[in-house]
Image (cartoon, rainbow, N blue to C red):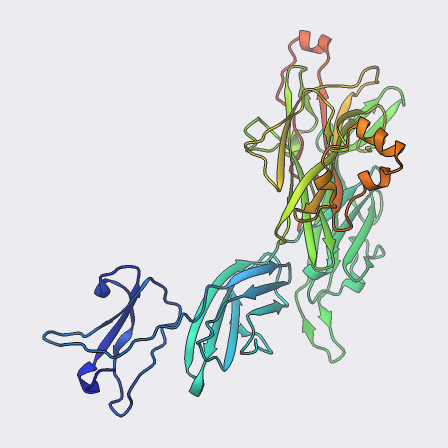
Length: 484
């Protein structure tokens, strides 16, 4: 420091991006050096900038320094993995920073802070915080301490845990709801039931599943709309009560429902319930999750989706259908591939007749167009000319089924990397016995099928009488789970 240390007192430190020292934020107040020591260390936790300046407040003072050393300390917190009930954080600490211990503190709105125990070790640059609530914003503060247990650095960050995706399957005679166990902390899942308490859940290590018949388990039927049925039930569970009588958590109650379109089928002489499917499916694999979605859009700008109340939508033969496929995941380096898309007159993709749109990754329908400007690695947006099935009894309803594959971009063996497998390529593969090699998918690929619809194409006679046309559509929800 200065040859005569007392001349330095008091002094200020400023850190920022301006080369005008005094305009940058100040680290602490007026600082003092002990005249019996040749140097002083000053910690400025959380401060960042291109310039570090030392300034003597007051007038007619001369600053003379032998040496100033600047240690980088911490980088910002990075959230490397975000789950429903945990978060993994990483950071970088300068090798010149002498760290003897860490404290990782976290909290969410309305709650007191908690400290991770055991805390990260001095040499750690990664930590996982378990036991968090799903879809909740948390603030994390990592503090480093050095010699004499003095604070030498502090960084903070805010992130929201993953939302809970509840998969609801709707069938003609029953509905099934599945909750991930990770989203049910302190819930007595072993005794979870529906409105009829005799209908209980099936519990595995990863999921809690309830199956309700449309006419039993207390299922409530709403037929107030002329052409629709809505069936509703509730998943109910108590808090966890331990052997010592302590009660933890909160009571659990989630409503789930299925919407059906009621149509009279002439050939069968009876009414049939057609499911309005959910646009979202979550696939959970070990600690990773993939949320697949398929939506029908109101126009080619792909900004607004149809609501389930719009079913069944009527379109004319001149209208276009606009649909999008997407996947979200906490993992990086993924890509989405449209393996198959086809249309059938029901929610069953194996029903007949059927119309192929995409097959083995190849565009089959000549009117199919991919919006390359809006599409990306994780989302694909398509438009196709409307169509219907010939020689089929009313109602001529159309459902679109799409099978999606998500792959790692770095995997050369993935189904995504193989692209379109044309019929000629398949024939060559069969002739040289390499079909399995050509068509195989990597074990790392994840695949799911989602259905959207129904819509109905107005026939020529109906068009002639100018039946009003609203456009095509499917809903943003069909199997729905929500607060009771």
